[in-house]
Image (cartoon, rainbow, N blue to C red; front, top):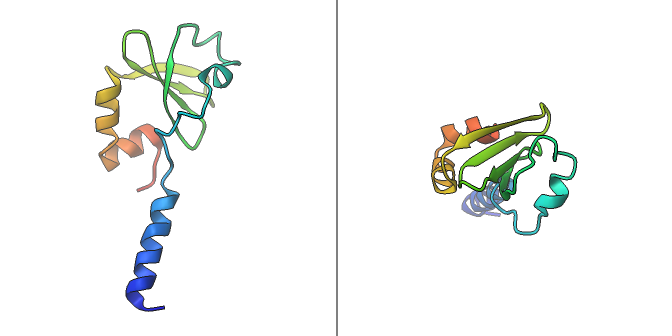
Amino acid sequence: MRDADTSDTLKRDAEKLIYPYFETADLSVEKLLQEWGWLCPQNVRLVAVDAFGDLFLEDERGAVLRLDTSGGKLAQISESVGIFKESADSAENRRRSFFEDT
């Protein structure tokens, strides 16, 4: 394999390793929150999930909440889904929100 081919293959493989935070269409928020009803009683929509199982939820007001599943904490982290997704474009914000090592 030529060096350019190897480089392209490695680049494609690295892109596959990026966690699909916002690919939640096939996940059931009801099942994911089954054990968390005591902490998150309101109606929410699943926006994202990180590699650690933390859930990012849109509440009825449109704000984004982070459910820290290891610490059992629920906190608002963004005023809206749009702002949250836009902030995920920044490597620094991904490190902060998703603990991504970029």
